[in-house]
Image (tube, rainbow, N blue to C red; front, side, top):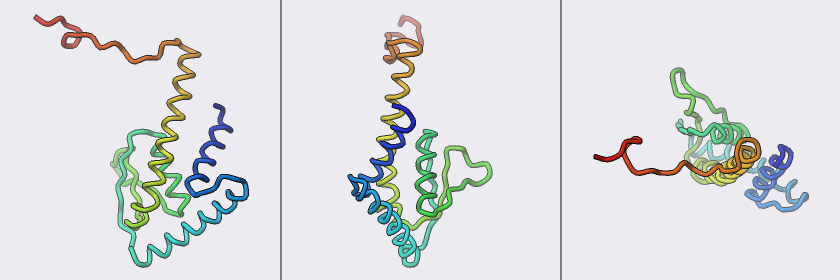
Length: 146
């Protein structure tokens, strides 16, 4: 899958998440995104933002979460000496629980599957066709039991 097809797939997934399946509905999805942002502003008035710490070891997942935060007008950050795997954000709890985290989980699941598929195919085509996991052998750290 090339980059443009992957981008299109992610956009369709996002559109589906927002309830769109046709180009006209995609326009409606963009409007829905603006409504999400407006809802976030309303939620912030009644449910003040609190500081969240997200720890994501997968670099693609970190990028996705940062992009989602920015899309909603939120600024991801880290404090000095925090690990690279940490993303901080000030977000209302209701928005995290009802919008941000469910959307992230759905998009992340699909993104990971796509990256895994592409990586597996590239390794099989470029390095060796057998990309299965290493065999598990009996014994402790390569030593035969006594």
